Image 1 (cartoon, rainbow, N blue to C red):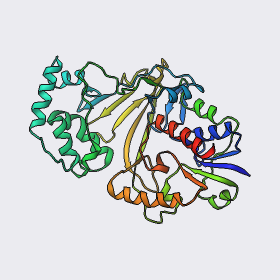
Image 2 (tube, rainbow, N blue to C red):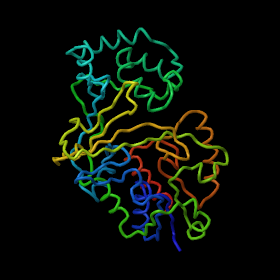
Image 3 (cartoon, rainbow, N blue to C red):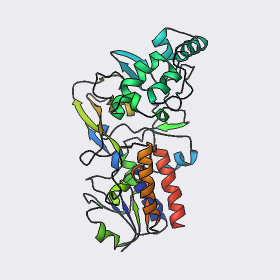
Image 4 (cartoon, rainbow, N blue to C red):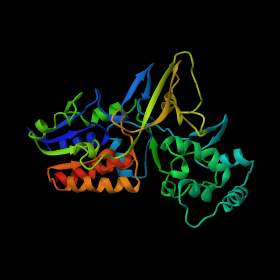
Length: 366
C-alpha cells in the first residue's frame, strides 16, 4: 500500500517524508503522540509559542541547510545568549570577556588569559581520568565550580568525578565581549514557532497520530517496501541485547498572566547544585513578544527509562558496544533504515538532522 512508512513525525521523519513525496513516493507517517513535530512541537498560550519539550534554537554553518528550511517558513533574528545563575549571581555565557569581568573584574584579554592560566596550572595533568579532572585542567577552579560542576552533575545524574573525561574535550574561551552562544552564521527561530515548518514539510502526506508503530509493527511492515524508523533502535529489536541508556527531562510549565517579563532573557541556566532544575526558559523572548503575560518552563533532568521519554543518548563505552550490535542487526535488513537522534543513538543538532535526512533520502531513493 505504501512505498515508505516512516515511524516518527519529528524533524528527521518530516524532512525524509518531504523528500520522498517530491520523488512521487507514497508515504505514511506514523506518530505515537497526538501531534506532529516530535520534540519541536510548540503549544500556544496567550499567543506565546511555548517550546513544550525544551528550547530549540536553529543554528547552522551550512548555507544549503539554511536555505532549505527557509523555503518553508521565515526565521527571525533571535541570537542565543544564555545567562548562568550561580547562587543568585549572574554570569554571561559562553565564557567570554563579560564572564571574566564578572568573575574576576579583569578588563583586558591579557588579564583574563593570565588568570585562567594561573588557575588551570594548579590542576594540570597529562591524562585526566574523569570530567572533573579534565575541566579543572582546562579552566581552573572558579569557572569549574561556579559554571560547570553543578549544572553537569544535574544534567548527567552523576558526580563529575564519575563521568568520562571525553564529555568535555575542550572549553571554548572567547576573549571578546560577545555573548552569542553559537559561532554559526545562520541562527534564528521560525516566526510562529516550529509547527508551521513541520506542517509545510508534511503537506500532502498521510499522517496517523496516536499510533504506536511498535504496537502495530507486524501489520505495518506488510504494507511497505521500506521502513524508516526514528525511535529507539534497541526498542525496535525488543531490546534483545539489552537496553541502551538515555537521559530524559521533565518540564514544569507555568503561565503568569500578570507578569510581562519574568527573567529578562530566554534562557537562564542554574549552575549551583542546590537548585533542582538546570534552567528556566521564558518562551516569549524567542520571538521578542510583548504579550501582557508570560510562560516559563523549568527543566528537570531525569534518567531515561520506560516511563520517561528518551532525550539524550549516554555515549559511553558500554553503550557504544551495545549500539554496535543493534547496528549490525539493522544493516542485515535492506528494507529497514534508522534515522534521527534515537535511531542513530547520537546527539544531533537540528541542522545535522535536516542534512542527514536529505542525504539519506538521496542515497535510499535516487
